[in-house]
Structures are given as structure tokens and as C-alpha cells.
Image (cartoon, rainbow, N blue to C red; front, side, top):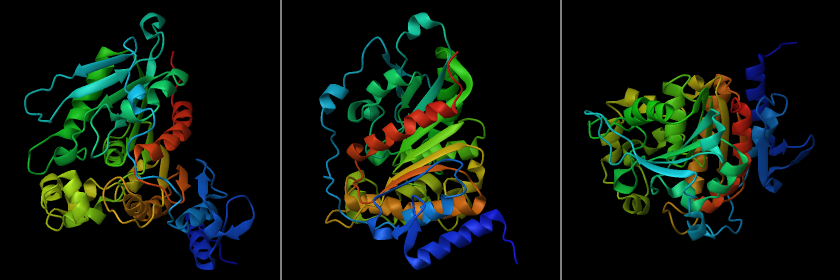
Length: 363
């Protein structure tokens, strides 16, 4: 009898399940077209292959989500309590250029009197969202009451100036330098942070930052969460994006070449900023991944089912790379969905308690 290494066996099981068209999510086989959600727990090596097969085989179908980027009650969520919410313009040293260094910080209730040190959660924005969008379009302010930490929301550039969390190849911007070498030390000097207790949470484009920073700067983040993320940047080589999407983002044809260089001549730099190519470097990081499968819709704009379907295509190669590298992760995948903040809220609520559990508690 030939014994396969555990990782090889898992991959073989995954391929076999994909071939049969059935998968197990609760100990019994069921047709994959009936699976609406798949959850993978970190460390669940026993059921990982079967559950990943179920996720990879989920259909992309319209489940009724409306392509509306505004969350109900958005105006109320815009109010950030002044006793806990602080807006800063972080000092930027000469030689570091970003479009804005605005950063919002939420401190735990009772922070001023507690004298305690807290974990820090960094939230990275999407390509159409400014630094404060998390607090305006999700319930993160309310969640912060239940999960005491220092919440940091830095600018990352958006629309035609979307920074993609990179030091641009053409020298225009130094977003990675700003976030990792300027912002993080500034937060540690300004607030009572707990050493070795940082997490990064990125939505859409923000996942390029959360995953990339963790991979390129070992030890910077102990936990990383990606929500409907842009996790395989190679699929955007040569700015191969739908025209409608490019127009909405305000991206000129050569924008990504300005950021990472020519995708052929500077292929190494593209790989250095591609979460899929960096998968092995995420080993040992507490990793949570969420996404919908999306669906084909009449619109290919950002806030659409088609965009979420494009995101899901990214995840297929990303998950394969993580599996091949033996990287542990937790995941929550849904059938259908639209690439909007409305969709992101449920995933944030699922991930945040696990992030807090993975980090050292305040003291």
C-alpha cells in the first residue's frame, strides 16, 4: 500500500471530490449545487479537503442580494463617538509620498482611565473607499464595544489614486513604506498598544495590503483577514479589467504598470505583490478568508455580482496555492453575493471574534 504525504493526500482528495461532483460539509455527502455556505475552521485538517472541494464547486448564482453599496442606516453609522473616535493627519517624512495620511482611530470604552495596553487592528480600504468608509458603511463602531482593541483606519488611496498598498514602480507613491514604517511605529508611540498583538483586516483591494504586508514583513501582523479580496493580482496583468470597471475606478490603461511595472518585463515585482505567489510566506499567520461566488450580471462595475464572481475566480488559484504550501487557514464562503459593504458586514461579524481570540488579550 502506497502512503501519500498528508498534503498530497489532501490535494488528491480534493481533486477526487471535484471529479465526483459531491462534497461533505457535515460528515455526509451531498450534491454541491445545494451547498449555500461552507465554513472551514482553522486547524481542521480532517475535513479541510472535503470542505474546500465543496467551496470550489459552489455555483455562482444570484441569491437576491441587491447591488447597492450603501448599508441601511449608513448615516447613523457615520457618527463616531468623540470620546472614542479620533482623526489624525499622521506626519509623513520627506521622501515618502502618499495622497493623504488621514487616519481614524477608535479606542476601547474607558481607554483614557484604564491604563491598559491593547491589541491593534488595522483596517485597509477598497479601491472606491476613503479611510473612514469602514466606520460609515459597517457596524464596526458597535462591534468595537464588544471586542476591546485599538482600531486603526488609514488612508490607502482610492478611485484614480488607489494605492494598491505598494511602493509604486514609477516612484509616484510609497504606500507600503508609509503604512509599515511610518504609521505602525507612530500608532505604537501615540497609543498604548500591546507588543506583538497586531491584526490586519482588508476588504477588496485592502486584501492586497493585509496579505502582502504580512508576507513581506514577517511578524508585523499575527492575524490577517481578507474579505472578498483581490488575492491573485496576476489575473489583472496588463490592466486586463472590464472597461466598465476601469471607467468607474478611473484607472487609465497603464495604471497597474505604473504600480508594479510591465507585467512581463517586471514579472518578479508583480509576483512580489501577488498574495497567491506569496502564499507560502503566510505559513504561521492566523489567516481568515471570506468571499462570495458572485454571479453573472448585466453590470461589470465594482458593486455587482459580476465583480464578486471575478473575486471568486481569484480565490480558486489562491486557495490552491495555500493548499500546496500547507498553509492553515479558516474560511467562510457563500454562494452568490454582490461586491458591496452590505455583503462585507456579515463576514466582518464572523471574523472579528476569531481575530480577537488569536491575539493576546489586553493587559
